[in-house]
Image (tube, rainbow, N blue to C red; front, side, top):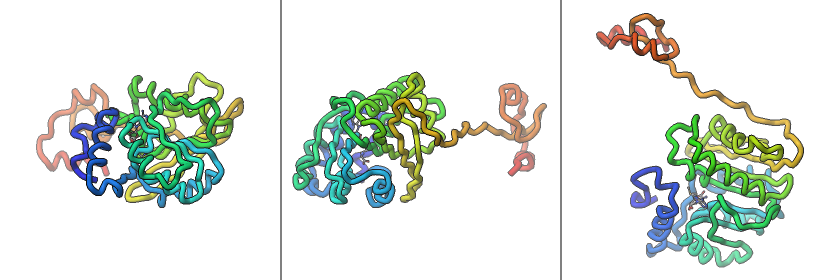
Amino acid sequence: MSSSLIPNDNHMYNSVDYWDKRYESVGQRADSDNESYDWLVDYSNIKHIINQLIPKTASLLMLGCGNSLLSEQMFADGYCNIVNIDYSSPVIKQMSNHCDNCRQMQWSVMDCRELTFATETFDVVIEKATIDALLTEETDHWNISDTNRQQISRVLQEVYRVLKTDGQFISISFYGSHFRYPLYKSCFESNTDRLAMKAIHEVSASFHYYCYQLIKCVNKTIDFEPQVYEPPKVITTCLSGNCQSNQLIDDKCLINANPVQDESHYLLNINL
Ligand SMILES: C[S@@+](CC[C@H](N)C(=O)[O-])C[C@H]1O[C@@H](n2cnc3c(N)ncnc32)[C@H](O)[C@@H]1O
């Protein structure tokens, strides 16, 4: 990826202006026909999971398709019923031209927080790194802000609405289940019907990514729920004062801790 496409600030990934400019600049390049970018993983990394979870006949909605090759490669693999949306109009224009040879695929400018499809339209909704992009302002994923939680909740409520009963939401993310599961779960707290997270697949590429399968359950519960991890406890070494080494940090301990006197003292207190 060209460095000129990398924003100065991560917050920009949550802005349609950023994405418009990025895709416009890609489109202006002489070699733009070949320009594509797959976030996190490409189809070769997840094909085995997709093939296992999704029948070829399924009707699919791709949220925040960007200029990824995922839909095109899935199409070539036999998934012929794919609707792609992105809120950036330049990329939808580019992709619909680029995929001229797979005419059954549809491309629409649409915000995933406000889908215009009828209720119960799709068997499967997929997103790869789109929800991650909505969360780039977060500095503490253990404590997602109310604003961002509401945003994700809007996406999930819309996904839930457009899915048929027992339909699947496949969410591919940078974030592990200790972050993603409580977030998705909290978006449905007031609902008896919900998207139950059924399975998690770890995807090994150059790094570990996560593929979540959520099922639209109407008036039924799903027995499998992944383990929820707690945030790590903050452990510190108290250098001296009234507390033991490697004690859980608290205000009192911090106040009582004296500054490091010398390096050997500091090293002695590290308990590996
Ligand atoms: C990180 S990129 C991922 C692109 C592609 N899914 C992939 O895996 O390579 C995020 C994409 O989501 C789109 N996007 C972000 N927020 C969106 C929203 N609220 N509605 C629709 N698309 C959105 C952006 O325009 C961008 O194309």
